[in-house]
Image (cartoon, rainbow, N blue to C red; front, side, top):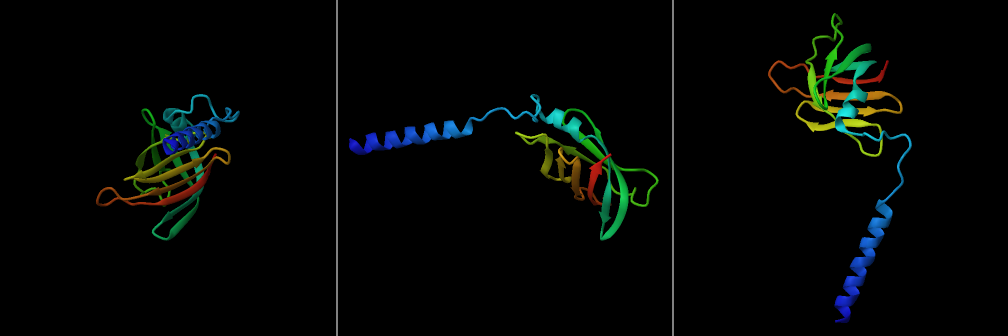
Length: 142
């Protein structure tokens, strides 16, 4: 009987500690509506940085990220540039809770990570069809 009482007390104590430390105040810089769709809107924009296509780097490259429906964004290269032949990709954006940052990780299209404070983005695309030209991009929102 003592061991059951002791185990229940330990369980209750652990639960109380978990609740105590998991409840925190609201961050001032985090939007009250930190939905995936709001995160996709924050990611949308024009970025300038470096495109890497099979070990060939293009500096001062322009990548455009446009908001599609819901929490989806489309990533395309600026037309008329030497790197414009890369394959456009659509990513499903997820808000990173507790921050203004966003990500699309584990998608077949690749990975996209957006840091809101520095307005930087890292994109790594993967081929999803024959003939796709994948690329890596790191840049800053203009």
